[in-house]
Image (tube, rainbow, N blue to C red; front, side, top):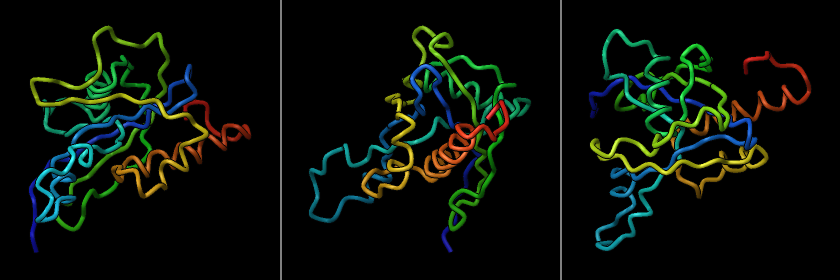
Length: 180
């Protein structure tokens, strides 16, 4: 078996109240691009390597930071919103890429609005090579987006968006907790 060492990670389902939308990120992933190439594809468009993802980050920072604090930091860096770590609700934890990495990914949920926007925030950290596009996906499009195989997305995005659809429908029927 091939095995790759890695770090645990966090990701966040972000609901934007003012836009009635889920906040996603889109970024270039070299392995996705490389796996799309065939021997004859020397000039494959870089867009093939762009993936849709939840805001996410590795658990490779200060060991005294909680998962919620790491998620809060990632939301600020990638999406440009300042949230309180206590506003993050744990959705689930699962084994990420269990066939070759086996790390844990914890998915959280939070809500944002325009008042939480950070001037100059979002887009990732350029000094770490991040170039992140922040997107707002309307709630009525989530399920179709999550299940469309033509749109390259992370497993956490599929899990998180489908969780949001399920919980959103419960909320619309008045049967969900006030924080989810």
